[in-house]
Amino acid sequence: MSMRQALHQVRDAGDALAEASALAAPVRGLEAVIVGGFLGIESRDWVLPGLRERAGGVLRGASVDRLTTSSDGARPYRIAPVTQDPAARMLHACGLSMALQDSDAAVLCFIGQGASSYGAFHEALNMAQLHQLHVVFLCHAWDLDHKESPLARQLGGSMQALALAHGMRPHSVDGGLVTDVLSAVTEARSHTGPSFIEARLERGDDPLRRAYDELTESEPATAAKIS
Image 1: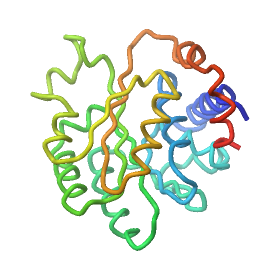
Image 2 (image 1 turned 90 degrees about the vertical axis):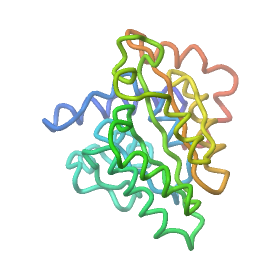
Image 3 (image 1 turned 60 degrees about the vertical axis):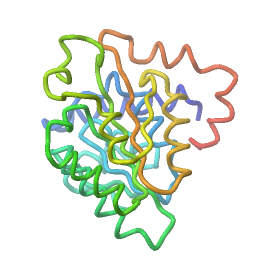
Image 4 (image 1 turned 135 degrees about the vertical axis):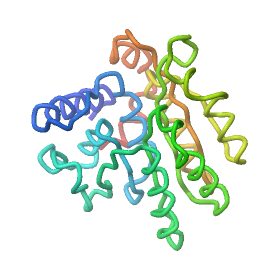
């Protein structure tokens, strides 16, 4: 399977989930973040997705039917049930990582920029750093530099600055470029301790066009991770 096929598979799964459940959230625009996140970790690692990101479970062999009931999760594929509160999801990721500390497994936690409005966001960052948990927080954030962005009205600083303040390693990547997200997640997963990745997205962009534009001769190397 090529990287382009992975992007389309996630989009198709997201569309199918949207048709099957009233609780589904649109995937379009997040394809590169989802694919880069799921492919940047190992099969033994756990994923805590939101309603959108659970579509990435198809890259681990889960069927759309298995992902339709978000509260069930997909345990054979190490995909946790969806937590409606993204900040609480961060705390759950910390708890799961603590339970896995005797293994070499990591935990990938998807969140959106809205999570920064909750106290649990700050609690989770502190807990992850305090206990050196092997958690990768992958946050997709829309229009960070736009004055109308909700982030500007709910956060005094930046999410990267908050992660840095807690002593962890923050990264900022273009969320429309799948190889950028993949590289950042792979690097974060290779380190012990927590990492925070901010995937910046722009509204109005064709969600797959930019991802296609940056898939060049590097694609065969990344395709092996999909198979």
